[in-house]
Image (cartoon, rainbow over all chains, first blue to last red; front, side, top):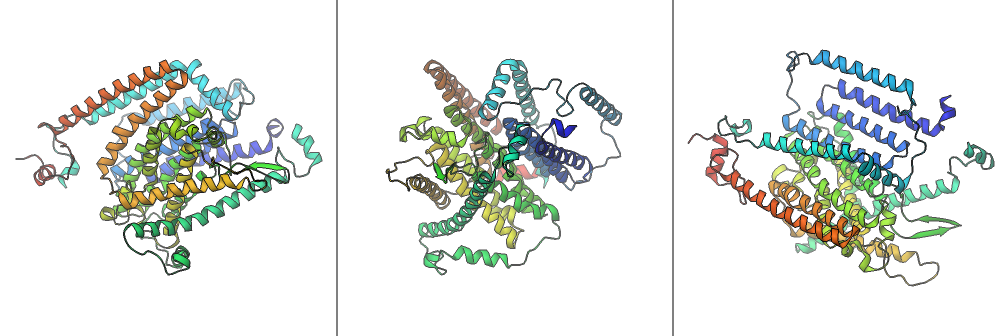
Length: 189
Length: 412
């Protein structure tokens, strides 16, 4: 039935991409070494990018690779290496109380939400309405641009404002005067 | 299922793909790969020769005419050397990293248009391995991925200097990618398309239509600086600064894996020269005499000539410019290139809409730059003030008494 609805090459690509994403996701949570986890995250993100490509969303795929693989995971790796990979963490003490039950609860909510969406819409994308073939090539980029700057303008600007606030907040936290405190850890060496 | 009906007529026909398409695609990939490999050996020879000329040395001259076969000899030598993996290394990542450096370098070249179109046996095709809809975004994606080669090589080596190198590489790449992306946006705005083929054809009507002149020279300068930083070529090669980090990320590598890093670096140099020609110098555009049958050769010659000029420029940079200090590198990226590329992007966007918008945004940009200069001045003074613990690292090397304060704490 699935093969009748979707062309076989599409199906193969979809399953390959899905396998990449899932294997990567499992790797992120199961590897002991944080660098290996970050590498698995790249695998997941590339899998999602292939999924976008397979649905003719070329621009989204490119942005996925540029922003997530090319910048955000690089930043993760930067922080991991900066803090030291070899530092063994003590996981017996919970820094945030009740984070485990909360994690279980949010996983349950997410799974329920996905199941609810699957039962109502296409199993393939989770979309409520099948949108049909998306425009390829330049028309695709134009469609994304038009949607972002007209229909979803408020969400777009709100996201931009949120990011700016985050950056300013981070700078404020990092740049406060440290005169009253003890010298930096690195400065004692 | 319309393609199933067509498939009945041609057994090889499948989803718009037939034998001729497959052969053309394979031939393009093989020719591009072979040509790139050949160019890399030439490029290594070229770089060594030009550098030695600039430094009044002779350079390689033993193997082949003018020492042309020296690279081949070096390649064979590297192949037969012992392949060492340090005991402290993360074995899987250590072995993976050279390929992560090499593959993006190869893929980026596929979007560069080398010439016009050629017709062989009624099949017309572009002299370009691929013309994907995302076009130039592939360059950004691949330059984003190529950093993993450096980062993971440095980390997985399991020793200190390579690790410092990979921390530097990750910070440097992120910093310069933003300026690079915004410069590319400027070009895309002027072209109205992401495809490299369209970018080249829009510049085909003479020198005045080249993006170099059409966009003002500033985006070209920004692109040249940020792409050199992305490549880790001198003067931005803090990642493999020999005087500080031994060999940087590839210190622990030997044999064929070291050769792969070398290959990737030179391949990237050639590819980025070609990309620069494509984006700013009209790619294969140029004067071509109307001679039948060999008319298609001239664009390729133009393209090769322009690309060689940029390859020479890179070697020239290496011979002429001293390496940036790490903090200067970060200052240049964040405080100069990113604001300037952002302002210039707004300027170009404004002038595309109307002159009034253009001048309006120019005024906004000017106002913004005044504010920014003021902010930098305040920030620098604040950093040097008496109540700041982190004192400025300043314009020259640290004086000893400041260094002592920084290292011993503030217990005068």
